[in-house]
Image (cartoon, rainbow, N blue to C red):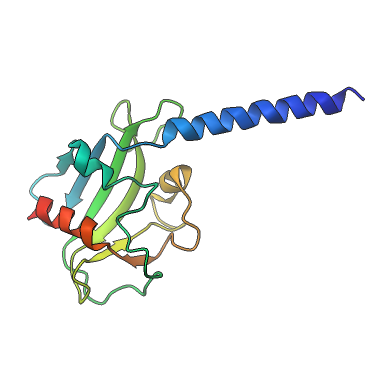
Length: 161
């Protein structure tokens, strides 16, 4: 049977291709856009130190010490947060900005009893879910509200004041 060696080689080649796409993708976003929440115009962040705090793979924006929560009764100001980076092999979305591809989207709300605010990660029924899961699947967290991390919330509050 000559088919088996061919299948093994094909599987190996596909594995290498998949891994190279993952390596290409992971990195720091090159642009963050924060909009809504009463801002007169979208805020565009390109500062490397700040960008690292918005890395979707690390998920530093969510307080990982806590599980998902019910939708808060008081949300306060809510902002759409979009992460963009150059990722040539990524499919294009209507949200892309030329060579910068939208790689992750979530909503951040400042209010409520939790001083750091809340993060909503889009779920299956939400517009940005496909964009997000192409980057990272947060199974069990997508489509739910989360507490924002203190450090991340401080960064955003300083930017949107």
